[in-house]
Image 1: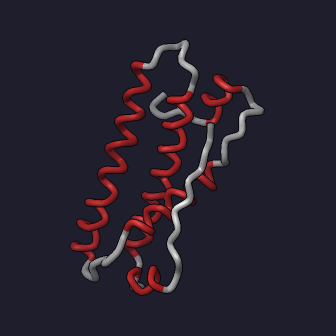
Image 2 (image 1 turned 120 degrees about the vertical axis):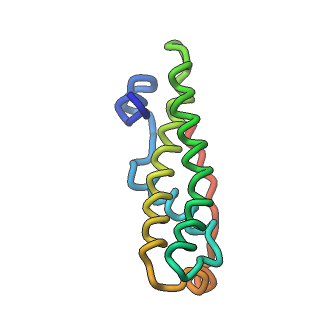
Length: 125
């Protein structure tokens, strides 16, 4: 297992444990990444470099969490698995946002000015 999935989380907490569905977690990651990006370059090479610079730290942090699971004892509370599961799903959404921004021709700066970007803090425990 590289990253925990919903089945893994159910083993720790049972099927009744509330965990937002992947689609919502990915949308949260998409929205948060989109809020982080301002001044998106027009040229594709510069745009790709800019998006990579913002996406890479998220990828590295999530991979660190996944790799750390190899060292978590079997009698853990499962919190590490839940946090990693959420981080992976958020990362998938952030990757989708980065690709949409890279492929897009519309001006994200103008789009962000026309809508309010608010961050929501969710409690999953």
